Amino acid sequence: MTAHHKTDKGQEITDALIEQWGREAEAGLDVAKLKQTVHRGRGRPAMGAAAAEALPVRLDPKLRASVVERAERDGVAQGEVVRRALRAYLGLAS
Image 1: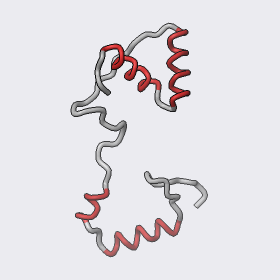
Image 2: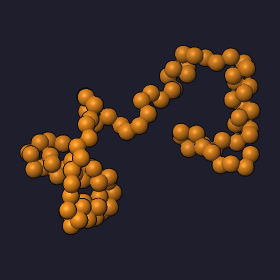
Image 3: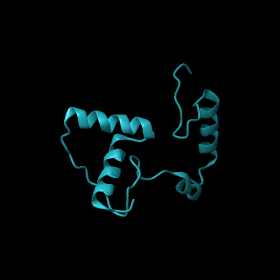
């Protein structure tokens, strides 16, 4: 196998792993076990009880640069910087 592919958990998919999966499938799959390990709801993690909504906002270049700088410094996404700032401004608990 020349391509380097990985599972969702980062395990490299090798020819040996594919053969193992084939043997397991031929022996019969335990559906109950599969249902426990299958990840549901791909994508971003939930942010609360309800689905989150996007809010497009225009930022001037200086403000945007400040958001980017803070995100890099804190090691978080730019959106998280904006959410934190809004919570602080609105007096909401995080």
